[in-house]
Image (cartoon, rainbow, N blue to C red):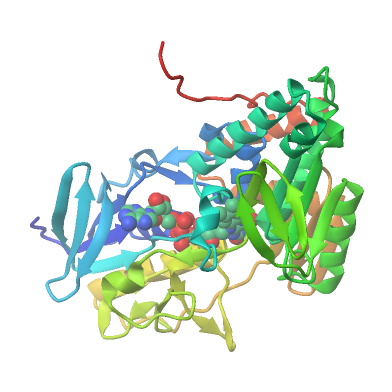
Length: 423
Ligand SMILES: Cc1cc2nc3c(=O)[nH]c(=O)nc-3n(C[C@H](O)[C@H](O)[C@H](O)COP(=O)(O)OP(=O)(O)OC[C@H]3O[C@@H](n4cnc5c(N)ncnc54)[C@H](O)[C@@H]3O)c2cc1C
């Protein structure tokens, strides 16, 4: 590929990659954004797809559409498999064409993270995680099917196992999933079934740590724990998960028969460190420099969940705000290099605060000294999430859906969609 202006290749159209691409809109460069999926996903709302509040199309947007008006930018559907840093090329598979080489002048890697089972990959078969739209859809199918099967099950033990839902990991995703299932069973599902009472579902939130939402203050953790308990969630803390199989999970010494176990515990970075053959941190994230470039590769930037950078002696968290701010910074750095301006001062993350929702009308908020829990925090949560959705149409659609769900307790997206074998 020949270009008159420098070519910036961005791999990953998530929060970091998209912010980088948008940041280069007015730069004298060509941009090529490569993603293995054709859409950008708003991951913080995946749990709402899994629990039938929102439809998949309400939290995802085609990347091509998001960048359609950016004339210096092209989009490519392809999966990156490696980097040849010496010849400044990325290696990409596109459908059955493998090993395509694309030259770059600057490279921004924003390939995110995936689930980590902390060395127990055998858990993956029985405890899927929640990272992509297809994860959320398949979890939604699974949850809805569990209630359908319970409705026709005569054996009380098997029925109980079908109506037991275990979340492993009490970070924001586990807390949000557990509380959303609890709300769903007590509202939408209440009148839907004849033989089972969905309110008797056993919802378990387990973590080997001693408090849920451990990145929040102790006070907010405790507020979240109390709220979970009031929603009927069984919060099991301080005990590791020993094993998971098709029929249940062993937590500490206790076996819980459960047909649904969801892994909400950990994430592992993309293989960016292996592609670049560079130094990584203990979690495998690429150790980047304060200007977000890779040591010895001033033309390669790594941002978001797949990058590791300390600030004030602590590693930056794997959250959307870090990815977005880093993506924008990398874009600005490249712009300045291209036009011959001096480099930016080192990257500094501006923490706007943390939020986690715990069922209807309740969230916790921690932001520069402010600690809030309850309805006001929930309103802030709702407004911020709407604000950060990628498109105006999604903001409107999600807002209307939330108002409708709030007032009616109905969930229109409770659809089981599976391919049927045969005709
Ligand atoms: C369920 C869930 C809930 C969350 N809730 C919150 C929250 O409430 N608040 C918050 O701040 N953060 C939250 N996060 C974290 C937040 O979503 C991430 O920190 C953020 O998405 C990181 O952005 P990123 O650009 O690094 O990666 P991502 O947004 O994950 O994007 C990575 C992109 O790279 C693409 N990609 C990966 N590998 C390849 C490859 N080999 N070739 C081509 N493309 C590739 C992927 O398809 C994807 O589009 C949540 C995450 C999850 C999973």
